[in-house]
Length: 263
Image (tube, rainbow, N blue to C red):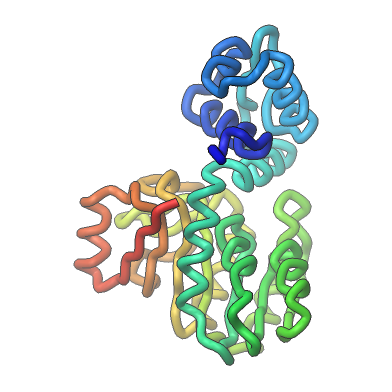
């Protein structure tokens, strides 16, 4: 079955088009996906209700500002759907780095969440996270020790941040950290729009023996407001096959393991 045969896959593709072009047209979407205009209008209505786009006559446009908490929440929900197949494939591949008995640290990124969804093969893990979503996924297995860090809750991402989260992190030694980021470049390193998330991520890196960065290639060669760490703090990168060749060469020259997946 083609991904566009499902409503979720089609809506994910619509959001990707909005990300690229900032506007979409009902008639063009109908032809592109081979469905009726009524179906497309329903898709746009649902995405509007989720605050993922702004409905206009004949189509939709993306939200303008990323500076407010409302738009930050929209961006988080947006990220859960955009590049969904790539994130799922990255999560499956990244989970292969885990060994039974590991203590793993999982951040609040949407791609890191996909790692937690792929732990079926394990019987003995300790999972530490600042993500309420990741905690809920981990509890479904009913056999792992799951630790949710305390702290201030960011409603937009359902993540724990701040001094309490960072203090709690310092209680643990972890084998592997799965870190998803909003922006990455070889020169500027890892970054995120949230200063609080960046600070918490910095402490996460300091507590992990191995740092595995998980992100799709749309995050490459970008820089956000808050610096997390330089690329030299990463041991492995798991991303999709659209990773630019020059970035791959630079990472390998830095002795960073690079793994690309096909979605």
